[in-house]
Length: 448
Image 1 (cartoon, rainbow, N blue to C red):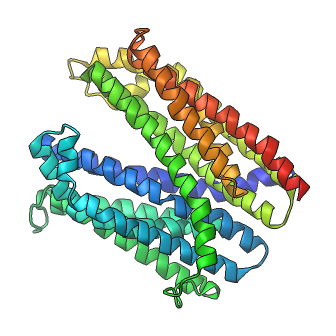
Image 2: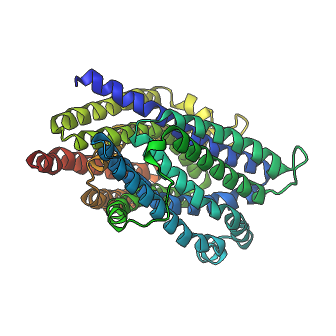
Image 3: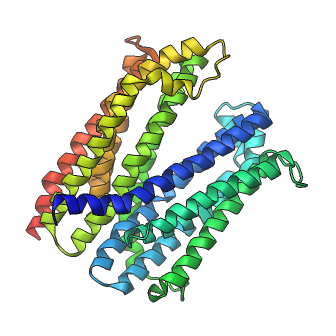
C-alpha cells in the first residue's frame, strides 16, 4: 500500500470513531448542564459520583480494548471462530468485573465521607450510584461490541448509535430531572435512570445489528460456554490496558486536585482549558483506535513493512492535527475561553488571564499527547501491553505528577506549573512508547 492508501484507510475507519467520541462527550456535557440548572448540591454529587463510575469503567474497559486487536488479527486471517471466541470472553470478563464493582457503588457513601466530602453531597452521590452503578454492565457490554465492530471496520454504526444515545439522554434527562412532559420530578435519581436506559438501549441496538448484519459470527449463540484459553488471552492483554488508562486518567484527576488547592478561579480556568484539550484529544484517540485495528490486521497477515509504514502515517496524521490545534490555542485563546465564561461574571478577567496561560501549555502537549496515545494504539494493535503499561505509568506518575507539584508549588508557577508537569509526563511517555514500537517491538516482529 502507498502512504496515501494507508491514510485513506486510517481516516475511513477513524473519522466515525472520532465523531462517536465527541457525541459521547455531549452526553456528559448534557448531564452537567441540566443538573447545573437543577441545583448546585445535585451537580456536585453527580460530578463526584460520575468520577468514581468513570474510573471503575475505564479500568474495566481494558478487556474491550484487548478484544480490538485480537479480533482484527483473527479477522485478517479469516478465522471467524477465533473472532467469536475472544469477543465472547471479552464480554465474560467485562461482566464479571462490572458485577464485582457494583457493590462498591451501591455502598459508596462511607467512601465519599472518608475522602472528606460533605455529608449531604456524599449521601446524594450514593443515591445516584445506587441506580447508575448498575449501568456499568451494559456500558461495558457496549464497549466490547464497539471494539468488535471497530476491528471489523464497521464504525459507521458506532457513530450513529452514539449520536442516538446522546439525543435520547438529553430527552430523558429533561423529562425525569425536572418532571417535564408529565414525568415525575426525580432530580439526581432521574439523571441516574436516564444513564441506565441509554446504556441499555445502546447495547440492544448494537446487539441487534451484530445479530442481523453479522450472523456468520454467531456471537451470542451458546454464549454461556466458557473458553479458558480465549479468556486467558483476553485477560493477559486487557488488564495492562486498564491499568494504563487508569494511570492516565488519574494524572489529570490529580492535576485538578492540585489546581483546586490554589483557588476556585484557577480551578475554573483549569476546567475550561481541560475541556478544550479533551475535545482535541478525541481526534487523537479516534485515530489511535483506527491505528490499533490497522496494526492488528497487519500483524494478522504478517506484513511488518506495512505495519511500519502505516504506523508512520498514523503518527503523521496526529502531528498534522496537533499543529492545527496548536495554532488555534496560541492565536485565539481568548475567543475559545470566552465560549465557556459568562460575560457578566465578575471573575471573568481573572479566569481568562489564567486560562490563556493554561492553553499555551495545552498547545505544548498537543504533539506529545497525540504521539503517546498513537504509540499506545499501535502497541495494542500488535498485542504489546505490559511494558507499555510500565512506561506510561512511570511517565505519568513517576515524572509528570511530581514535576507538576514542584513547578506549581515550590517553584511558584501555580496552575501553569501543574500543566507544565503534564507536558513533561506526556512527553516522556511519547518518547518511551514510540521508542518501544519502533525499536524492540518491530525488531521482535521482524524476527518472527
